[in-house]
Length: 189
Image 1 (cartoon, rainbow, N blue to C red):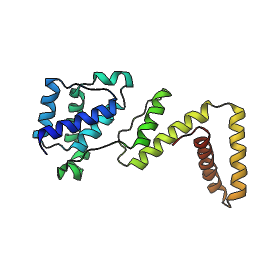
Image 2: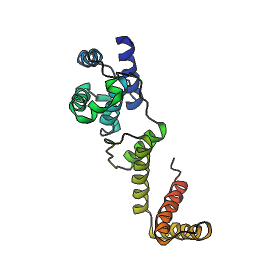
Image 3: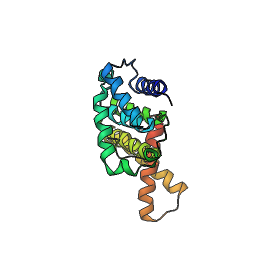
Image 4: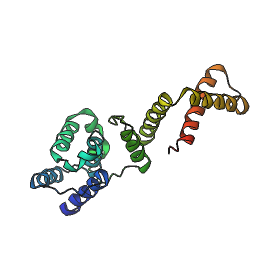
C-alpha cells in the first residue's frame, strides 16, 4: 500500500468516526508518515482512533489531534498485548470499520450521559453485550416503579408458560426475559 492510500484510509476513518471533515495539519501528516514508516497496520491505528474518540464528547471531536492517538499507539506498541497481537506481527494492513450496531449503542449511551470505556474488549460480541447491559441497566433504574412491575409480571408469566427450569436457571432466565422486553419496548438494536 502506498502512503497516499494509507493516509486516505485514515482520513476516511476519521471522517466516519467524528462525522466531521477533519483537515490534517502538517504535524498530523508527519505523525501518519511515521506510522507508515514503522509499518503499523491500519487496523491497529483505526482501533486506537476509535478507542480515543469514544472518550471525547461528539462536539469536541472535530478538534482532534493525532498526538494523543500517537501516544496511545506507542503505549500499545510497548505493551505485552500489542506484542502478542498476530495482526501486528504479520503487518497486515486492513481497514477497520466499526460495526454500525456498536456505534449506535455507543451514541445512545453518550446521549444518556453515560461514559463507556471500551478498552479491553477484543471481541465485538462481548463489547456489544457490555454496551447493551449498560443501556438496559440504565433504563431499568430510571423507569417508574409501575412500569418496572408490569415488565416483571410479564416476564414471570412468560417464564412460567415457556420454560421449565430449576431455581437458579429461573433467575438467569428471568433477567434474560426482562432484558429482551426492555429492548423491545425501547427499540434497542
